[in-house]
Amino acid sequence: MTRQVVVGEVAGAFGVKGWVKIHSHTDPPGNILNYQPWTLVGEVESRPVRVLAGRVHGGAVVAQLEGVVDRDQAVRLRYTRITVPRECFPPPEPGHYYWSDLVGLKVRTEAGEDLGEVREMMATGANDVMIVRGERERLIPFVLGAYVKAVDLEQKSVTVDWDPDF
Image (cartoon, rainbow, N blue to C red; front, side, top):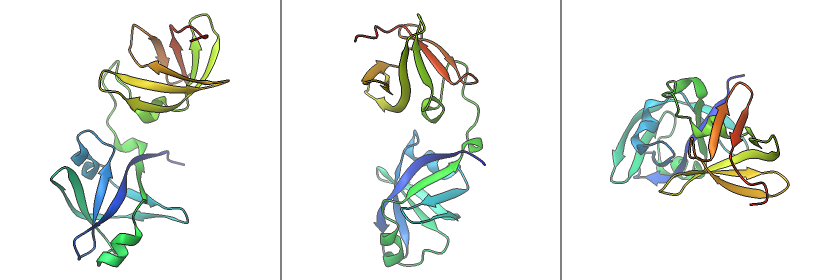
């Protein structure tokens, strides 16, 4: 089965003709429109949907989805996650990683001590941070060379220079 990546969510209705406002997780936000096909994932069901039109509007992204023709239908999609197949993304440049590829990796110190796994990534402005959960939660800056010594996607692991007591 193809791995799906969450790229945004429907934030609400936009206008009266069924358009939706999108909270995009892509950078820049308008890039979400470049990744197709979308699957809408709700609490009860998931379904593929075709994007008929879309654009950046102010600081948000708005889109017209196939089969959504009025405001009531658009409102019912609020909080629905938008996923796309992982294969939609181009390979990252050397030394760069998609957050979705890091989530779930095991984190170990250089001495081999298991710290847990990457549960989430967080942007802080200065640098990205791995939220690592094991016997407890740790916030480890994702700074290659300084704290992150190696990322091995095949072995599903990250090696860090980090004091396990911190």
